[in-house]
Length: 147
Image (cartoon, rainbow, N blue to C red; front, side, top):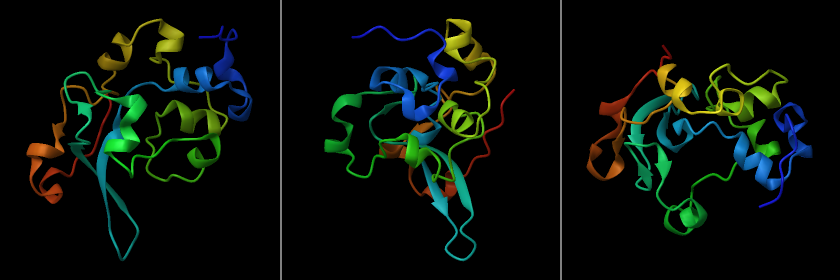
């Protein structure tokens, strides 16, 4: 593991190393939840149903390194892709930086801990259900509001 630069999160996304890019993720896991798209309007509805690899208690992937082998449609976010994915939450560190905005005040790179993110209600930890037991996605439409 190489050394990350001081305040690297203020750099352009294209200038980040792979390690810095991964560290920028706030770990909210909202991108690991299933979404429903209205075929007529294109509107995206979020659910509280998590990918089968997500630990619903911690909001961490159980096999992040090999996730695409188990979940082929898992999206590997890149600086270019972040600009074209409409369903990333407004609080997402990748989205915020792509839009030239600062990290949210609760971000672990600013606070040194993920506790503030949990207190702000930004994480799905303990607030989602695995797709293995969820049933129909339509029964799990959720509006994620931060506290």
